Length: 383
Ligand code: MG
Image (tube, rainbow, N blue to C red; front, side, top):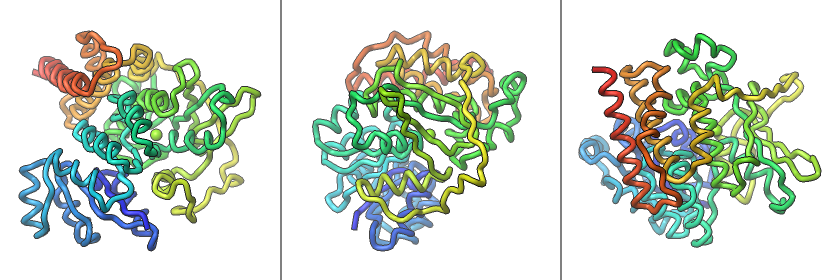
C-alpha cells in the first residue's frame, strides 16, 4: 500500500490522480489533498475520501471549506507544507502550476518523499535547485508530464554515454496547420479545443501557442541533464509516440501509449513497479499512420521565445514562466487578445537582467517581479 498526498487535487491532473487511486484497489491510499481555491470540488472530493486530510492555499476560502465540509482544513503554504511532509505519506503528487507549490515541493524532497511531478512550471522556475535537492536527499522524482514520463521510461537501464539525443513530441495543439491567419485571431473555441488531450485551460492555451513545448524542453533539460543542442521537438499529430531517445549507434527507443494522462500518473505512482493498465489499450493497426513534422518556431512566437530563453537560462526562465502565466490568465479572463500573449512575455523579458544559477530567494523575487511587470503591461495596453 502506497500512501499518497495530492497537491492540486481539483485540477485536471489532480482529478485524474484521484481516479487512478480509486481504481487501484488496495495499492494506493489517498491520505491528503489540497487545492488552491476551488472549494466546491474539494468539498466533494473530501466526501469521496473521508480519511484524507484536506488543505486550501487560499486562506479566505479555507474558512468556507471548513463550514461546508465540517472538516479540519490546513491553510496556506504552511498547510501545504504540512501535507507535503506528513509522516503518513510515501508519495507526494505535485499538480498545481502556481509558484505557491514550490516551497511544499522542496520540503517534500527534503523529507525524502517520492515525488510525482506534474507541474512543469516548477522545473522551469527552479529546475537546477529542485534536481540538486533530489540528488542530495537521495529521493526519486517521476515526471507525470507525458513526454517526460516517456523519456524517463526509455532511459531506464541505458548508460548516459549511450545517449545521443532526446526528442519530445507535440501534437501541435489546437492551432497546428491553421497558423497563418489563425495565429493572430483564432476564436476562443478554437484555442480551447485541444485535438488530443483534455486538459485544464492554462495548459490548453499553452498548447495553442506551443509555449507548452518550449516549457517542456526546459523541463527535459533539468530532468535529464542534457545540453540544449541534444534536445529536440517534433510535431506528431497522432500523439501516440510521446518521446524518443536516440542512442549513439543510431538506435531509437520510443515510448507509445494512449493519450490519457492516467497512464503516466499511474506509472509515477507505481514506479518502479507496473500495474495493469488504467485505460483501454492502444490498437496500432486501427491508427494506420504516424506522422512527424519539423516545428516552425517563427510561426509560433511563444515557442521561439522559449527556445531563446532556454539558452540564456537562470532567472530568464523564471520570467518566461511568470509572464506567460499572467498573459494566459489575462487571455482566459478576456482581458488580453490571443496574439498579445507573446508580446507580454517579450516585453517583460526585455526589462529583466538574467542571473545565472539563482538562489531560492532570487527565484521567488524574480517570479513576483515578472508577474508584476506583466500585469502592468497588460494594464497599460488595455486601459
Ligand atoms: Mg506534456
